[in-house]
Image (cartoon, rainbow, N blue to C red; front, side, top):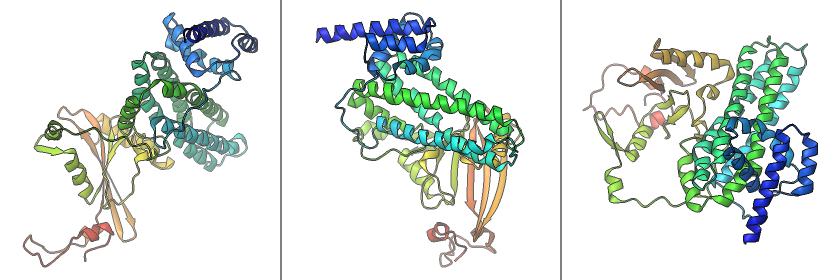
Length: 421
């Protein structure tokens, strides 16, 4: 065992010395050949060990981030995966990360396909731009993937002594999100199809390439090391906390479902949430929101979908994929500018309510957005309140509490969207 450790230590030192030649400006192909001649092969753990040593030697995370893509280029052809790893149950956090990466690869391909018509500068129709913008906005879901990785996976690795990824990867994530943001802004400017398409296409391509590099790094380096390093308790903790951040383009599977922690009596007594006018348990709150014959969706101060009520009484369906997503990317591309304007006016205090209504056959959707503020008038987010008011529009006269023989409202009335019975 000591010989194997010593060999690995020497391999890491050799790998580090070759990587430093690349940093000093030596040609990539020459350095790659030297690496093949001396190291022959390496695995994900050795790559992270090299980067961890470089950080310990004083290289900043920003400096190392600027080299990380070249490191991947350098290691192609000699990077091997350890054999014999058991298949993961569907829904295991690492499996979910990989499934999301597969979905992101498909989304990148869809964006590239949507860019093809834009390359013809003679075509000035706005429709291809809108199609490409829609495909690109789906890709923006990657931010939830990054947040979950940064808040749950990387800290778990750091607790096991691998703090290099926790210092390096968020820097790279922010660079990628900045590229995506720049491309999104150019899409916004190009909304009418009249802007400079060459700049738009170049910005989108840069962002797509950056997303692909991170997918490669996660699948080939980060996740294999995490699977070798983290224990069952680590993965259970990640699994239990993941839903708060939301999912990127896919829903996690259900095969991986650790048993919930045993509930003690003190947990139950402390389970109630203290409110200004009473206290409710989480179960009571969930049931209460589900019983309301209205659709509630709360968007936090960062414009992310934080909550929606469930149940059979909703007028518009919601799926868990939207949790953690920027609300702008939950609306059709043609309405994004209006959503931005409303939220900005809520945030600045210029406005407190926005109101709309839509006829949907026998239903009449009354849609209101409310700015939510704390006692000090600080903006906390926005509440979307949707109600089918078709039954209410047909009310006339009076119906008092004791008029029990006049059954007006039933669960079926709201559940099926009908009028007064």
